[in-house]
Length: 224
Image (tube, rainbow, N blue to C red; front, side, top):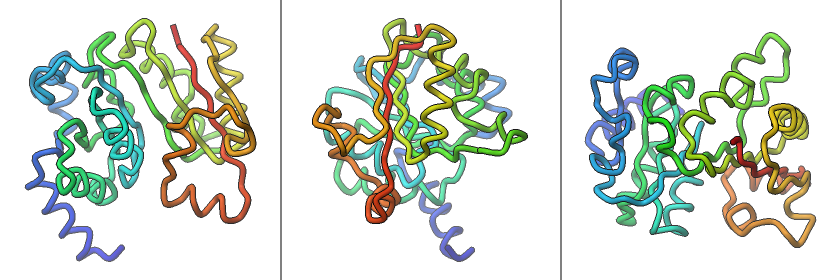
């Protein structure tokens, strides 16, 4: 994507009512007053909140919002030029139950209160295979602890990825901390029991993976 195109998208994001772009300092200092107030201040209802972390183009957030009008969705990514497409589509399709938040995933516990989130989706994250990159892996122990803080007691964590490594690594960690594994499969399209949220929603990159016969893995668990 050219720099001119990026700048155009950044400018459009500023005008979108469904895009929130706080400064890092605002998040850390809680000066936004969003923490604990997402349902009342942002969505104006009492419906459960689902996060998509590292939402990319926002395809999953938008598709889930269409599928579940009775839930609220927040797509989170630091790259606003990417989720511009999802935000624009949500506005064009009049989906009031999805917004996009430009921030670092590591700050998620500064933005959401204890038990404020019902579900977390992590879709096709960078597996960060090199050992020195472990701290950036979105299901490392530090991140899992933060997710556990903001999830309600029966809250769900979903991981959908094309990386067998990421799937196995995460599964091992979850079993080690005593999480309840509700579903885990290394090939969601190769069995008859995958949830429709997993098989009926396909991102741009997922379709590319499937064209070259790359297996898509998925797991769902309760951290508590």
